[in-house]
Image (cartoon, rainbow, N blue to C red; front, side):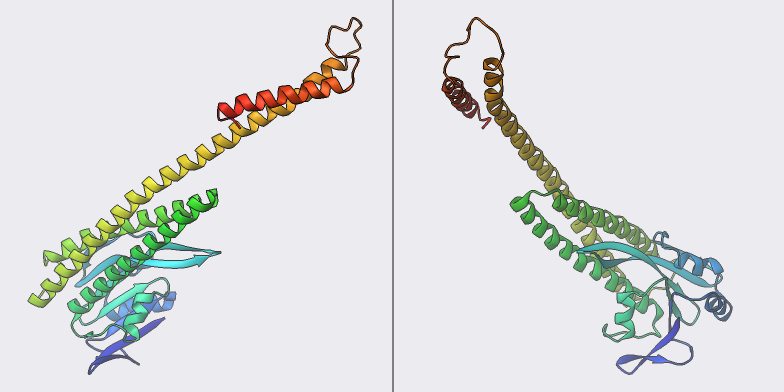
Length: 310
């Protein structure tokens, strides 16, 4: 799908046809739409293919008068009863007269720009539009990182209550999300640093300040992701140790119980042997083996309890 947007007064609106200074929003394009983009805007075909590749990493390059900026954006989706955080790349192509965004799927950040949620957008200012988009992406990373922190805190509290391995699996999933975020943010940081050199897109004074703000936010997000990941790794190690310790305690108690309950079996087996001679005391009384079993079981249980095995 290809849509065109342009600033009108203080807001942004959809237009029917592309014109100079318009923002071209491309989402999950068909092969025909891809060919149309390449021919209408004289684009390198690799620009479109790279933008639609979910495995593409953040980078910036120029070709045939256009510049491609690929940045990783945060993505969240629900799977069963859990929330999964990941990243998806989006291509931003700065053409001669337009800015073109290309994504393989619907993106919440692009939708916010299209619906006018983000204020102060002027589509004719190409560099400013790109930088504000990148700033919005970085702010969304920070927002999701805070959500991940709250989620991990909630899971930690559940682990303290139940010590179930399912909660530990949730922590592993959260840690995986933090790794994705950290890797993507570091890639975005490198791309932004390359943009600051001014070799790929022209930067004005206001653009330079905005780009520095984006870089500061990215570095803050990287630091947050690193801190959360470190804390979470320590929590996972501690939780694993606690679960293992609880299992050891249970196994020790079960071993003690097994020893105690095996005593009547041993005694009844001895008294039940058909051996003449009466070498076992009290064999003539049926209640004596029962009493002996109770006494030995009580003594054994007391000894095991003193050794913290019961």
